[in-house]
Image (cartoon, rainbow, N blue to C red; front, side, top):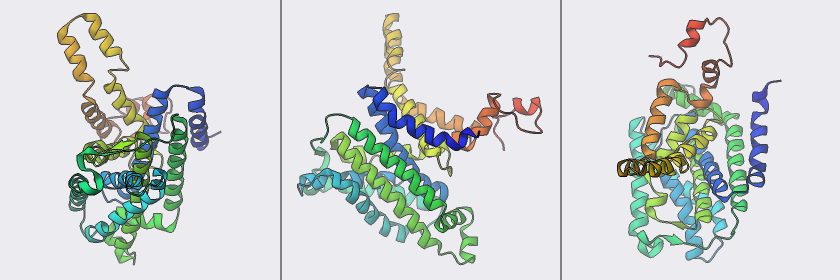
Amino acid sequence: MDIKKYLPYITLAVLVLFPIVVKNDYYTHLMILVLMWVVIGSAWNLIAGYTGQVSFGDAAFFGTGAYTAGLMVTKLGWSPWWGLLFGGFMAVLIAMPFGWICFRLRGAYFALATLALNEIMRHIATIWESLTDGMVGILIMQDFVSKLPYYYIALALAVTTIVVIKIVMGSKWGYYFLSIREDQDAAESLGIDTHHYKMWSLAIAAWLTGVAGALYMNYMGFIDPHVVFSLHDISIMAILVGIVGGVGTHYGPAVGAFVMVAVQELFRTGGFGIVMKLAKASESEFIIDMAQVITKAHVMGFGILVVLSILYLPNGFVGDWDKILRFLRLKRPNNMDNNDIDNIGEAKP
């Protein structure tokens, strides 16, 4: 029996039962964050991994969705849950004119344009105080005291995202996206309207990211410009989720989300409190200070993880899964001797 065929269904069953079996709000909170990052990372993977348009603009769409949900409460008196619909719609409204103009750029120039979009949206949210309350931010009352409803909503959104992207990539659009990624000039010579299909890819990615932002607003209950339009906390994190999990792979962003949230929390808590306990036990002020530095060094942890991924797993955990199994001696490829196995994991030029 091919376990890989049934692994997604087994994983889904585990996730459905997780909050029932593990009745701990802390771990449920972490899983909610993981599931939100599955959505954001998968959306980035669609535009960058499958369509080949590297984007730093996730924070712009995420923040737009979050502010849409927040403003529906503060300005219209509506339920913030309407943001799950209108947040994605508003993110698409931001993405479409941007894509229409900037998809004429290629490579690094398009990436820089998305970087500029992030900063534009952050400054608008900061300066337009009559609408957004500026740096004061938006605070709303959460609808649920328990984290359980948020968990299952996030799970439903993550599963929907994965299914939608799988359907899209199995359609004619998916083949067009891949052709644009591989060789845009060749795709155009075959009659594919590359600008049109890049716009569609961006629209789907922006919609999904905007919905994730609206869910964040509902779950956290507070946002400000530096939180939801953050380049390093949103846009860079989305890229790292894709790189670590596997760019251009279907389940790569899901795996990357689990890994990145785990690494972030491992550093933030100092190994879930172990580092600080050992430091205090040593009664050394220097060691205690170093332990406090470690708890704030999750960015360094991200950097180390990305470097290791690029060197030894350039296709991410999912893309190089067979390589990982061979390295662990769990799978031996045909026509490979022991010396070849010992060299697995070395970077290829």
